[in-house]
Structure formats: structure tokens, C-alpha cells
Length: 173
Image (cartoon, rainbow, N blue to C red):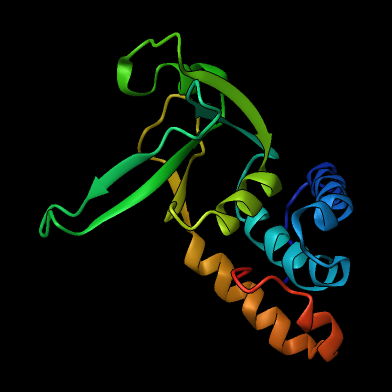
């Protein structure tokens, strides 16, 4: 899993710093450090490298939970998915849906942390990244399922010893 050509060195370094923070916090979340280093972090780096920014702004409700948007399929309205929008600017996040609500906060989150949270929250199907300020058309969707699949592939490829695998939480991926 390589960074795409043309990815600035500064962004690569930023990803490394973000991932180091996640690796250091892994035991607090019940994730063994070797699993985080060899399977989760490379997957997060792969997906983060497909995006244009090292941090994004997301909306949080007063109960410290993400503002979730439920999207339905136009052809099949019963087919829904739950998404979180991530914005490149605070202004874009604040003006999302054209409603000013004092109970909703805008916070900045490193991209790898956002992807890790998506990976671990089963009630969310995707993150939708709005890549250009003010542009509602230029967006990238990354699904939880895709992240989980890449991490599972990494785990299989590594053939981790049974003691490490035994310590992986059952709902991990």
C-alpha cells in the first residue's frame, strides 16, 4: 500500500505522526499494538493517501456524537445508508444543510483518526469527504466495509501468531 505519486512529503509525515498517535493509544481501545502497527495503520494510511487533506471538519451534536445523515437510494427508497460528512473547511461544515444550530459543534479531526473511528463504529456505513471548499460535487466516499476488508486482508497476509490473534477483540473487524 503506497502513497500515490505526487503526494507531498509534508502530508506523508503528517500521516506518520497521526498513525503513531493511534498506535500509542491502541491498548486503551483493546487493540494489540502489533495488530495496529502491521494491519490497521497500513490500511488507514492507504485510505488517507487517497484524500487531499490531513484533517477534516465534522459536525458533533450536544451529546458528543457525530451528526449522522441517512441517505436513501432514489430507485429503492427502503435501501438506506448512514453517513458522516467530513469537510475541508470549518465554514463548509457550519453551512452544511443551511441551518445554524447552537447545539451542533464543528470539530477538526486528523484524517487517520476519522478513518479509524469509521472502522470501529458499526452504525455508520461511510464517510463522505467534501474535498474542495464550497464544492458539493467533488467528494470521496469511503465505506466502513472497504476499510474492514483491507484490514482483514492485512491480518491474513501477516499470518500473525495465534497469541496475537487471540487477543484481538471479537468485534474488531
